[in-house]
Image 1: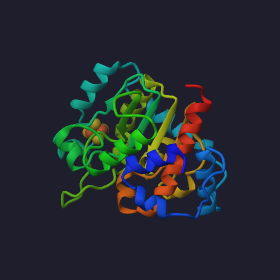
Image 2: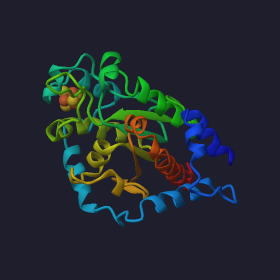
Image 3: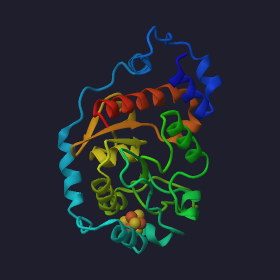
Image 4: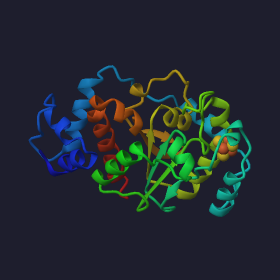
Length: 260
Ligand code: SF4
């Protein structure tokens, strides 16, 4: 097993599970990304070929909000006092995002859950720990050349106070904040964590399966964007760990190809 993959397994705390999986032969070379992508293609041979570029104007339209000229402090203050959608009524804290504001890597999730809402930070709790371990396996760490944000800044809950995905109107209301964050950061690669992040950033139909978006490099504006599963999903579906590893390999290849 090459060193990079081994580190990934160990950092994710999934080593024994991963090592039992032998469907993909260990690479004769050290090109783990190619091997992972080979695994991906074997698992999802019907993956579609292209992202509709027609999705992009929807993002551009949403970006035409009032955040366009804001600096970081103005943006953070605007989020903290925001009442643009109904999620403001149930929040404890807004969750603006965290990390290096000149980061090459941007990771985008769906929205705050219970722990995030209480602490005002994205990706805390078990899913956050897994994300941190994924970052470590990639040679990254939270706050150092990485920025982590969500599609919506306030916690969406259902009538029983359980977490739920944000509704389209909530996503639309909140997207200008993330769009301004992306413009200020200007990352080299965006990693969309889960369906809500991927579809919102790419402006695609809500019925689009995440599986059809994985395994290739999309564009958010001019920035490369790679789609993978949300860490919370991965915690519930460990069988998909190989797919996540393939996605992260693709993201690293994309980053390296950009010469960043
Ligand atoms: Fe404002 Fe976004 Fe919170 Fe809605 S989710 S209230 S748009 S910050």
